[in-house]
Amino acid sequence: MPTVLITGANRGLGLEFVRSFAAEGWRVHACARNVEKAKSVKALEGDVVCHKLDVTNGLKVASLARSLAEEPLDLLINNAGIYGSRADFGETDFDDWATTLSVNTLAPLRMAERFVGMLEKGERKTIVNISSRMGSIASTGTGGSYAYRSSKAALNMVTKGLSADLGPKGFTVVSFHPGWVQTDMGGEEADIPSDESIVGMRKVIAGLTTEDNGKFFNYDGSEIDW
Image 1 (cartoon, rainbow, N blue to C red):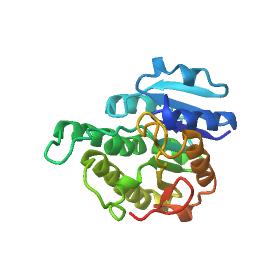
Image 2 (cartoon, rainbow, N blue to C red; image 1 turned 135 degrees about the vertical axis):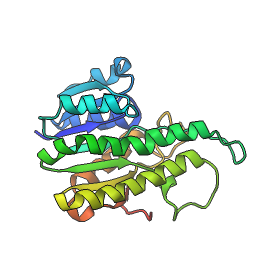
Image 3 (cartoon, one colour; image 1 turned 90 degrees about the horizontal axis):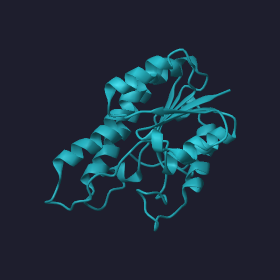
Image 4 (cartoon, helix red, strand yellow; image 1 turned 180 degrees about the vertical axis):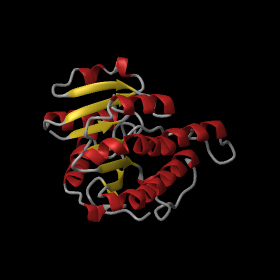
């Protein structure tokens, strides 16, 4: 039975990831900061184990990794993320920016470092970082959203760095743009529902090989320029 660990699993894309993998018989470690309120996750059928986890807390991440150390892990999905301040130029909240970087950029690397031992025991050895097209420097033609854009651009660099470090060990590390999704972050006017995004990303993930290591994908499988 393949095993996946998903952060930010109590709502939006994270919840849909959990539902999708559980329905296909995967063992799912569903991590969320407010897991005690994650009634939707706990109500799901399947082999789902909920963990209370603040991905910005290094001690908590290390503790969870130790408790699961003997279990093989096939797939790590770094999904937890925040948008941060939407302030315009000249009104930047730098404390908020630091928080956004902590969640969106530092935490995925922390998770990779702490859970790499479990991933080495798994068959798929795959790390998926949920990024955004807004983190693509090549695609940026507007200003604003500095905290979010920079955190996702930095996450893409984390992906490339991990792909170089872990690729020789048989790992596949990729970034995904999930689309503009109808979640709490994306809003009701977004382009696609979360289940459509998940179906697309799941299809791409299922077909990943080591040849895809270090790539940046759209949810539909097309590649995005860094």
